[in-house]
Length: 101
Image (cartoon, rainbow, N blue to C red; front, side, top):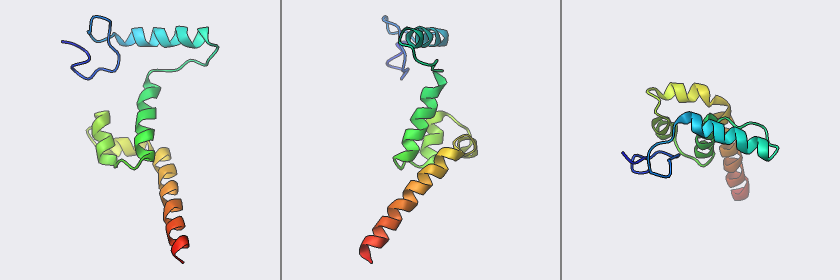
């Protein structure tokens, strides 16, 4: 199995999936070398979901991409992001209606 063919984000040079600890170890070393706070690889998952919400992707699609069996799981974890995205949507609507008035 080649990691890239299976949709893995992190692959070894030979195409096989990387062990999760390898990614964590690499990020620790990278962060330390560059004087950055430690970044947990799981943060990439949250970043992806947040970016999708802020760009108007629906909750069902995001939940499916995250592999959640229930949309409610996604909603519970990302409630704060959804609220911020909803405020952005409200601001857009306000601009639309105020420009037409």
